[in-house]
Length: 314
Image 1 (cartoon, rainbow, N blue to C red):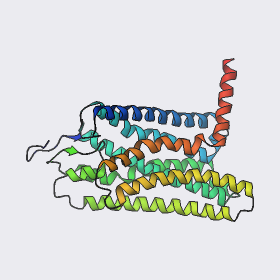
Image 2 (cartoon, rainbow, N blue to C red):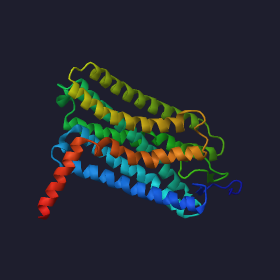
Image 3 (cartoon, helix red, strand yellow):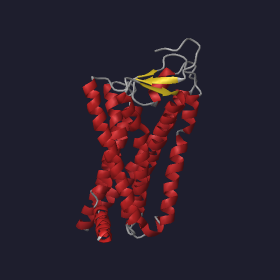
Image 4 (cartoon, rainbow, N blue to C red):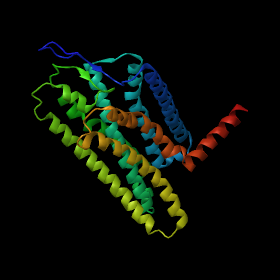
């Protein structure tokens, strides 16, 4: 569908997922279950950390509970729209709604990167500087770090989104995707694009390379420190903890680098859609399992909470 020459697109058409009705129905069921489980996992983590006096005072779990809030917002930005478009033949989305989704997708994605960096810093300080850790990572400094993650995450990509929204969209208005993403939106903009694509690339490359480098260096220092640790028990416990963190970081950054930074990732083929589903729906489901629900402290806190509930009901 194309707009009449000279007119401005007031809405976009998301082609979404191709395939037969049966395939779309199975995908609808899969994503619906995944979405509900993701919300349930993160609500559980937030509840346990909030109600457990011990965990609520530990910086690591303050960061993780805020990370869970962010994950719930992140998955809600994309999955409900996917489910809606799977029910309909094709999804019509207004210009304003499309750019709102685009902004929140990148704002929450940036916030997640900052939280991953904050958690890497927390583990670096806890393992490499254990004696100074209580003074360096106080509750006050931890909450300041959390606030910085939210604020800077939502401000970082604001300028590129505003610049793209001011471009003219006067030609085809069909997006071969199931969400409003950077590359398909830019591909529909009418010339002149000026320096907008270059500015977007600079913002993304500086952001991803800076955060990824910080995370790699932080965990690198942690691993080097653990290698030289003589206490086998503490080394094993610390390696177990950071291995979960590194797994989450690898899953998140690996998919994003493949999507936005590697040449050829701009082709929104079936493979690209699958990768997008992975980092917008599957990764938020896996993160709570990797980070918290397999954590002994969280299990113990959950057990205490359940026992308190049973005692109260009696």
